[in-house]
Length: 224
Ligand SMILES: Nc1ncnc2c1ncn2[C@@H]1O[C@H](COP(=O)(O)OP(=O)(O)OP(=O)(O)O)[C@@H](O)[C@H]1O
Image (cartoon, protein in one colour):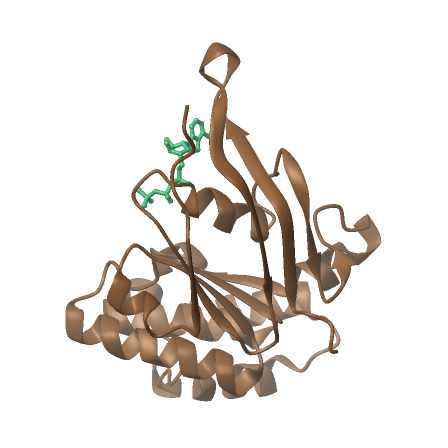
């Protein structure tokens, strides 16, 4: 059997300080194969973004472990940090967060590639990523504010796949878009991940969006 792209076992999280510190993510475990799309759904406050942040390495769990391609992910060796960070990329709810406002989309992509994948040739990866994400290469020299919401979300998808990750975490990636654009971007996200063999963890409260995925895991706010 091939090694899963992502394995999460017994992950839980507490947040807040002092007496207000409480369990915000009940223990959860799941496995994603390469190219598999899984939706994480649940009501507001269930811990979906907390889980996304933990998988992205932006927050720490209070229990449990994550493995990426079979290797422990939560505590990557410092020397491997960039190489390992490259493997798990995010597509944020607000795509502008993926870009430096004063830089062109091309410069932001070049910067991400140089930092996370120094052995790669940026121009080649940018061209491949734009094609995969169906981002018009004619828009690469624009700044983020010069793009529509849908164009910017495709640019964020291009930025995420440019460094050839094995896991994509998309946290409510279409919630800021109108319904037609949201559907097109969601379809693009799924087909891009499947075409590249990337495991997709799609965080959403939208059942229609979750239905695009092969599997749905529903989480609930922990009982206090
Ligand atoms: N740093 C923090 N300090 C205190 N509480 C926090 C912190 N981060 C998250 N929480 C709490 O943890 C719970 C889960 O938050 P989270 O953002 O993960 O939920 P969610 O399922 O993504 O919700 P939504 O669908 O509304 O985005 C919420 O009750 C939130 O207030």
